[in-house]
Image (cartoon, rainbow, N blue to C red; front, side, top):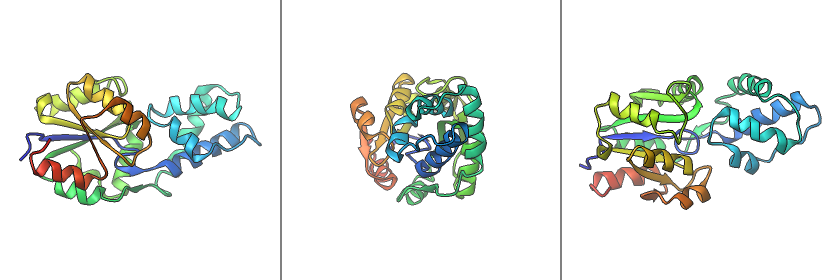
Length: 220
């Protein structure tokens, strides 16, 4: 078996496709702040996701031509989004089967999405019990690509960096892993394929089943 005994996953764009719910909540927020504001297209929202809710809102306001304090807009977005976390959000194809094949390893989640929302989503999808930790924004010092959260997971699971693996869909995930001296695998189907490719992860897979197969072959 591969020595990668700890596998740490990003959430949005890696385990779950949450883009429709995020975009809907963001556009409802913009409309409440400024009636008549144009809705941001799904692909525009896709490019804004990845560095946490505050940066998402801060970057969306000027894109939509909405003038509002970021903190006010953030509070509204969080309230709106919290009421629709699981309207359309689902695991990507192959995620459940891939996690099944990884049961012999220690699994965790590290995301910049608020931790309470992340745990609610994974619990609602019946996946939360698969992970020893689900850490999000506010749960750990700093946000990805700060490696503090990943290093905390290493410490809590008594894992050396050489025994761990980070799995994500974006440049932020690659940088996080590099900053913690952990190997990193990218998924091709996520929110930021161009950014991911530019950061050159150690491997790119098309599904978590493909990742599990590589680990079973001791090929990573």
